[in-house]
Image (tube, rainbow, N blue to C red; front, side, top):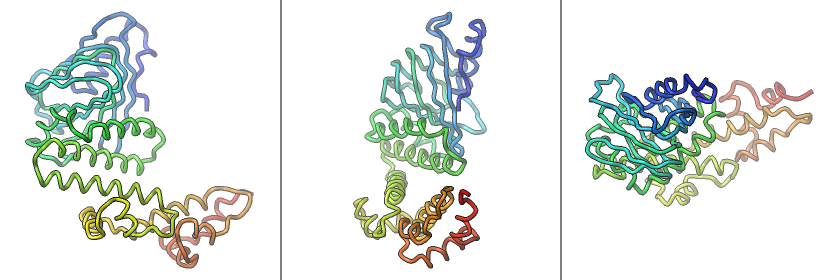
Length: 313
């Protein structure tokens, strides 16, 4: 949602408001605009995705500085994707290039300098403890993210987050935050030589791919573990092992997702009654009695009772 728009402020108030907004979002000590007057501007959207905050900002040319180390009770990493603007980001004796389609990271417990032209970025703000990667591995990796083969994937993911975030409910937002965390861990693992972290991150990515494949094929009756494993180029054993490590019971999760789809379809108000058997078949249930039993177990009423509540007169 929109959290700041300098265009809504009188010209004399803009610099002070922009300074406070952007230094707060980036945990900077101060901001210096490259030019003054009416050309200074900032438009910022922000969303909370289950503890991962995503900030989308379009700002005039500026320099941001954070001076001194921070003893923060809740230390945070920033992983930023560039869409417009060029410049440099300096931290821990490293200089990262800022340009469209690039990805760079910031550990907010350390000083940094960020200098850019007119810019547009989308940033994931991830608490250290939520990321689940030791700082001794994560902090150095932030300096090398631009070289990761996963950087374009993360950039595309953040662009898509920006497009859909306004329309999400709490559960969907938290799920999207989980996906963002998994990609962030994979991004870090791809530029470290820690084998355990790499295996865990690749497991996270496989699980995301499996879930995406399942959701895209929920209505197909032949959706089963063999089909899923083959589509994701892994063995059945590896598929089940990955799911078990995430405490995901694959077949039961597929049934829950199918029930959720049928539940939503039956709730759509229509002048005529939709056949329960047809809905069951459409969502991959070969037996309407089995569908009705699972539906009642999940929602506390039969499919026909649920449908009747939403029928248009």
